[in-house]
Length: 237
Image (cartoon, rainbow, N blue to C red; front, side):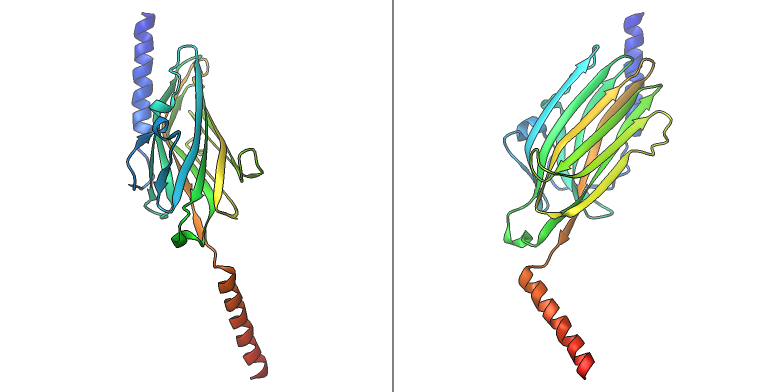
């Protein structure tokens, strides 16, 4: 009977998660979906940006499946509404009653070293965990710290969560910072708990990175000089 209830609970959670994971993001893929384990010593190019320096760890208690880099898949793409380039992470982390799953993910996002992108800088980061569901007193909490270098200065912090009766109010978060050529997600901590009478599941999350174009100093100087010239003509004309 106990085994039957466990199977029923698992099927229930998977059904809820499938319904919840229909993403509201108008996602436009620009790379294939690949496992994190295949990228641990490599990188993924998406648009004008690069994902690299990946580190992943995870653990689980009370019979939940332990997360591994082999079971996490990542794809580069664009938000069809905003045009921002980003990443889509897909997996299946489930926690039933008294179960707990935790993962820690670190990686670097940088503008490609190419003359075409010399004037481009990253100006913000966004997170969306719309592929999450929870029942009872189960829940999901995701915290992210963005730094300017490994163990460097914190330039942004994000937090998302999903609980049974929150109406999906905390699935998204974003933060802006001074334009920079690279950022380090150091780190993203994701916890999935079933509580004592609930369950939780997350199947995907998105990260987006807006860029801004900053003119070269010489261009700024010419624009400033041109503006001063116009003002001088108005004053003495």
